[in-house]
Image 1 (spheres, rainbow, N blue to C red):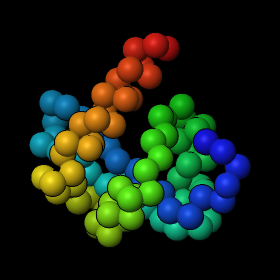
Image 2 (image 1 turned 60 degrees about the vertical axis):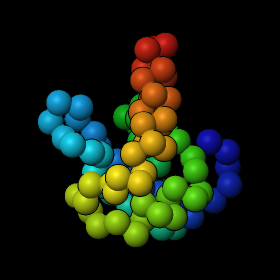
Image 3 (image 1 turned 120 degrees about the horizontal axis):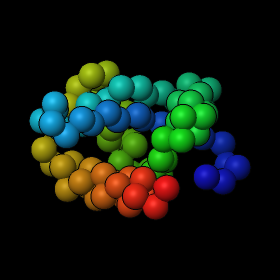
Image 4 (image 1 turned 180 degrees about the horizontal axis):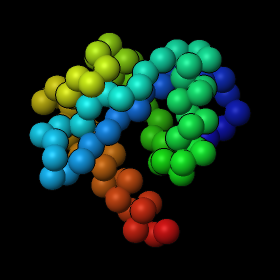
Length: 88
């Protein structure tokens, strides 16, 4: 991640065998967004940047499942994360 100021961030949680779809676990703008990203980095949680996606996800409520129309892009992100974890 570059040094530009983080404006928005959303954290998702997905447990393959326990959940139908990923849920929003944290979201925020400005300072809160920066803290979400810092915590993710502290715990080596992969960070995926997509301004269009974050603008949609930030409108969801905490603990809300992502809507079906986002399944394809979220699946691509999960593959991205899987590949990162596989290389560790």
